[in-house]
Image 1 (cartoon, rainbow over the protein chains, first blue to last red):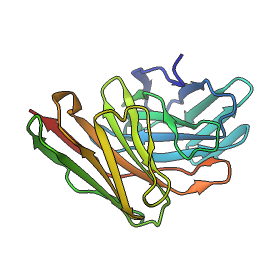
Image 2 (cartoon, rainbow over the protein chains, first blue to last red):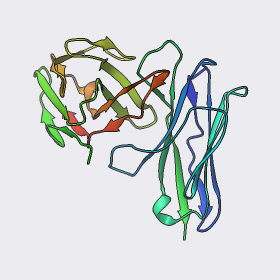
Image 3 (cartoon, rainbow over the protein chains, first blue to last red):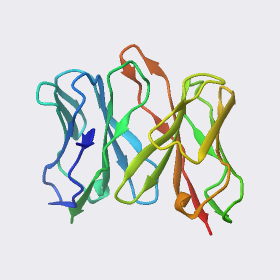
Length: 112
Length: 115
């Protein structure tokens, strides 16, 4: 079982729709959770971080964390063509280390 | 504006050559990381460092070594480059957090081709 799992996609949504990206993780003691966006040919950039159960909203983005189910998701409202990218889920494992484990990413395509 | 820079965007080397990839951050971060990214495999951690002169192996350290003589600089060394080390190499830095890791800031990446 992979430590951080994501559906590779592509996930295609029409412009203006809600895009829902999902991620599951295996380490129950994980503490920190991140969503990075990576445009083709570019390096990842952080868009959301979440550390406690529930929802966290930032503009059109909402991160949701459910530690009991070991599940973290990212919702993008009013999707725009500029949101087309690969979204990487990242999780800090338990043990006090500073590194994170990345999923392989979900490719999102927003169709105009 | 926070910044992580890498010495080269593109690099072409021959099999058996010694290769140095350098990374510099200006955010006074304690933690620095080297990843490689390959299609279908995602980001894989090669080495990381949580302090000057300290280093820890990541998931795929074989064939690589690192050096961190100054806080702002973290170097990745391929002692004898091989064709299976052709990849995109990404450097990142972060500050520690009480419970886990702070978000990582990435450099622009170095696309290395080994012929």
